[in-house]
Every structure is written in C-alpha cells, then in structure tokens.
Amino acid sequence: MMCIVAISIHQVYIFTFFPMVIIVLIYNSLSDKMKFQSSKILIITTTFFTICAFLVFQFYKVTKYPDMETLTQAISSYTNITPVSLLSYDYFFNFNDHANLAFKNLRHNIFAGIYTVTILLPLIIGFRFIWHFSSNASSSKNLGGIYRISFFAPLAAVPVFILTIDWGRWFAAVLITQFVLLIYYLANDDENVYLAISSLRERLSLFKPSLYLGILLVFHMLVGRFEAAATLGSADKFIKLFSKLLNILATCQ
Image (tube, rainbow, N blue to C red):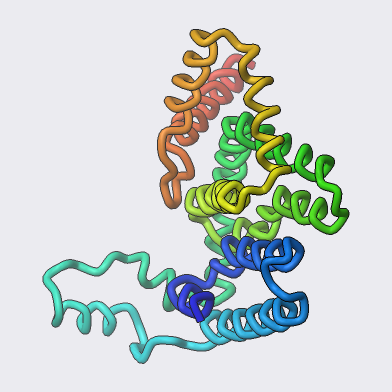
C-alpha cells in the first residue's frame, strides 16, 4: 500500500526507491526474518501492484482539469499562493513533451552529470568497497548477491535521467537509497556489513586527521546541496567557467 501511495506522489519512485524496497524484502527472506514462501508472495504482489499503479499514473490522466490555466484557477480559490509552473510539467506534458525538453537540456545535463559523478567519487568508491567486502565476507552466495545488487541498484534510475531534466533530485535519491540500505543492514546487526565498515575505517585511519578534515571540508564545499534541475550549484558554475574557457580558446585560434 505504501508503495502505491509513493507512486501517486511521484511515478519516479518506481525507478529510485522501489528497488530498495525489493532488495530489503529479499534480504529479509534470505536472513530468515521471513518465511520464504510468504516473502515470495509479498515480493510478487508488491511488485505487481506497484507496476500497475505506475502505469495508471504515468499513462492515464490523473487530474480532472484539462489544462494548467484551469488548474491554477481551481488552486487559487483555496489559497493565495501562486501555483508553480512546474505543475504543467508534472500533469500536462505528454511523453513527447518530456522527451523534447530532456533533449533540449541534454548537453548541459550531461556536463553537470559528469561533474557530479566526479565529485561524488569518494562516496561511490566507499559504497563499492562496503558492498564488495560484504559480498566476499558472506558465507551465503545468495546474501552475497544481495550486497552486489545493493551497489548496482542505482542503475535502475537510468530511465529517469533519460526522460527528465531535474537530475539533481535523482542523484540525491540514488545516494539516499545507498545510505538507507547501509543503515538498514547495520540496524539488523549484519556482521558482514559491520566487518566492511570496520575495514573501511581502518583504511581511512591511514590519513592524517588534518588531511582527512581538509578533504572533508573541500568535499562539502564542492557538493553543497542538490538542486532539482541544477543538479549541484557548483556544477553550474563549473559549466559556465568551462564554456568561457572554450570560447577563449576558440577566439585564440
């Protein structure tokens, strides 16, 4: 039921957070927290109804208002807050409209995405180490597979990056799922993940505290906070600087 509610809030849930839910359900079944048969039924029914909800909300009109102007008038009768124009993007754009807008902003988003992934490499490497170590430490082949899937789960969000322009939200969602999975495993006293965290801590202890603090400060300054459409504020600044540099080089030739 909660998955259907989440889909009704935003259909992108099926590509971002829903894989995390399925991973947790499978993990619980492998950890003997649920009987295999009951967990299998739960996983299948959850997946089925979530996909059905996604198809309904994605391909069928879910508002009785024919256009943005009518919706704005209706909302204005209840509040003095002016509805944001993004509502037209969410409720009145068809597939072609989304695709055209995504293509229009593709060049900027690709540069911003590359910059963002580069900045986030320390986190990506850290999670890669944790899931890989946990997988190798696990005596269960199936459980080891769950750890590997945990690392690759963000790839489920690829369709969102192709068809939308507000990449910042999806980068944030991808990171959130990784942290939530890690915290969930730790909360369930997963020995393999505990060993991975301990090993990672030992490796990080090789850095001098002052150097480590400096890296964290620089990292925090570069990442800042995620914007919806702008990805990272520093990404936009980098792209503008890079564009100016290209223009200067072009004029020098």
